Image (cartoon, rainbow, N blue to C red; front, side, top):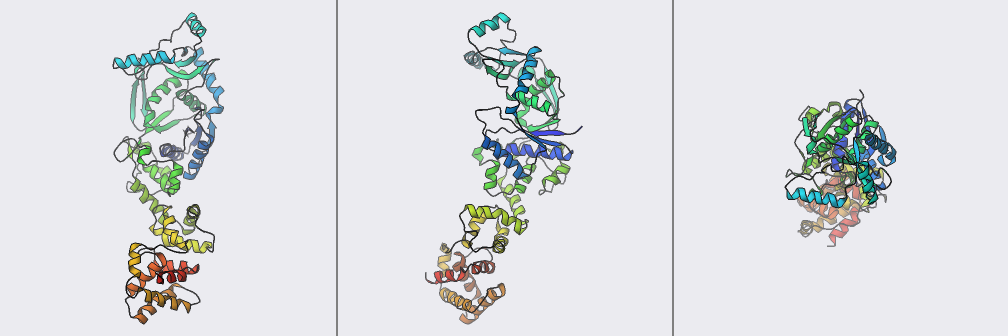
Length: 479
């Protein structure tokens, strides 16, 4: 048997981290077994589905490295297939037309609520006579298609994450709607039905999704049986929780995958972290690995039943590790768009070699890619703003004389190198008989605006290449 799994997002919003984590688990399982990872776009909600969301989903999966083997398939292009299947169930007496109005359903729910009962349809139109149907049609009523569910039926499956699962038909809310109302026949088929038809048609062998779909699984197993199809295996992964143990929501700062990208997370770090949300590798101390490495050892017996807590600090740490270990040229490619979006003059006198020197300087201090905007700001500006500490430093006795000495020494140099910069500092210390700390602190403030920052000599070399060091020294002396 060839393993075939699918991810089936709905294009009613951008690709969310919960959907992306489900995609990760599907991808890992498929690659572990040498199977196929299939992409299906569930766009039957025509009012809310948007092409820009589809584009976002496809771009997000590609960015994460979750390349699919087949698809994307669009449910909106498969409506004839679904309606044929609905008609099959009608012909077999396994489904029926229900003419109950929305007002009648609301009255039913209110009565059940008053009695303290869970809301459920009472199957009142399951056995309509032809005369009764004709009367409802004469009233101008539309109908939905409902699938018959036996309340006494026990639905059992062995979940790859949760082991034996048992549901009763009476827990499923009565006969379920599988197609919407229509004036001229079978209307828009609904999720629980079309997903089964698609999975049968695409020969899906394993359905891997979040635990919030468990109740759907019981209903869908009944549909597989009614359609005479082989039932796939199911694996329900834990939900992603916030640090308080509640289901993750937008209030927790959770955003779409494209927003994680804008926030400065690398694709490798984010997909690495999502892999760890609910799964642990055989080597329990290993935390950094590629998709391919994880795919080799991924099994569901190491997926947790308990919810997986989302930890921003852990994601930041992972991201920093990928940044710190990334080749400078690759990191430079990732940072240039952030600088360009910030409006920095990336191309003005800053050739590739200069940019890579800047990246080598600030990269070891970065946690997110977006950090490069603030860290790189002083290298893309003609002037700098003094911090409070920096201003105090320049007011210290001897600071202005030190800067004057550095400027004078620079005038005698045709090229500034690391060795020359060190010699200038030593020369000023000796000539003015001051401590080296005064020279270093005053020079740093003049060049960067603060007493703290990246390596001073390397910063000086970068600024000197753009002839910004002398103008900043003069500016600092004039304060």
